[in-house]
Amino acid sequence: MLVLLASIFVVHIATVIMLFVSTIANVWVVSDVGAGSVGLWKNCTIVGCGDNLSYAGEDALKAVQAFMILSIIFSVISLVVFVFQLFTMEKGNRFFLSGATMLVCWLCVMVGASIYTHHYANSSKNDYGQSHHGYSFILTWICFCFSFIIGILYLVLRKK
Image (cartoon, helix red, strand yellow):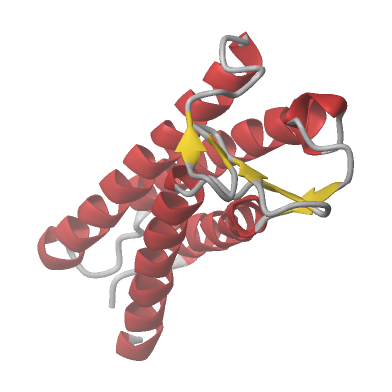
């Protein structure tokens, strides 16, 4: 049981780190032609990164930014609640609060990544005609899977 809890804790920390990286890094879409990338916050080229996103004022991008920040917040809260429950909860109880908070994180990641996928991933709005998904975009979908698995495991596990 201790090994299972430790492995879930490590995967949870990795998920928090990946959420931070995917939200902060400006590599959601990468140009196939030149050395350029677009993220949630900036447009980066060989010269440097600038605040010149062509769709920076759109509500969809603001929603993606908000949901990704919320997912980080809920993931960190879930981690803190898990550690708190680990030391204060009675034996035999389940980690309901940790699981519910992590599933809210999962929902935020799903909404944010889905909005970005629908509006910007394969469209002319991303400033590059020929492009592919960057590592931030892929990390976001990996975090989507991990946060769902962690949330379900928290709901199923009992403290022994």
